[in-house]
Length: 113
Length: 111
Image (tube, rainbow over the protein chains, first blue to last red):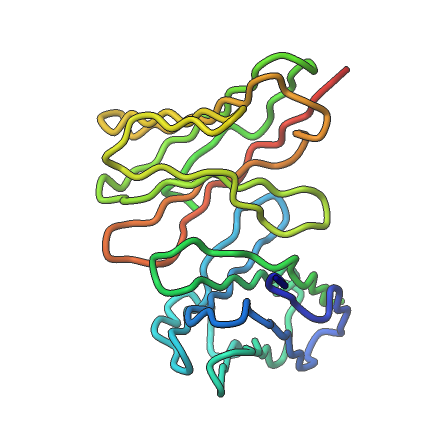
């Protein structure tokens, strides 16, 4: 079956702009996670959804970051007033339920100039 | 993540065994994972071990867990050029669902 997909694969934007990153989880997976991977580092947790609700957004770095999952499937990570320090690969993962194996998408590489 | 530490680089000759080491700090970790990341690709789960086990073998992969020392290792037998990648150790703590990753070990397989 299809895995986790993310679009776009690459996004280049200018400082101060708004961006949206999309994640399509594996069909039927109720849990969805966003992680951020900076160069030379391991992924760091941002936010976790169980169904439509954000069960844990403790990893979001500040209020410029927001994510939604309105129908419990596709999720969008939104970043306002982007800064150069936001440049990273944003990874999405989904699992059948919490505590199950997390399947990762290929990521979106965000570059803020 | 600061709670999971790995050595950054490993160079190994094709056909030899590779051993990648990881230490973690949270004794409540329930699952420990090894992920592989190839250039431009997402993370691929290789194997995992539950905290009440001390060893798990899966074809060329052997995971060893020393809970007392909070040390995890991944051994790859008969290392091939296709094994060149970054390997991440990750922990999932008790009653948690998010993964905490190490910085990754870059494995280079030379002919």
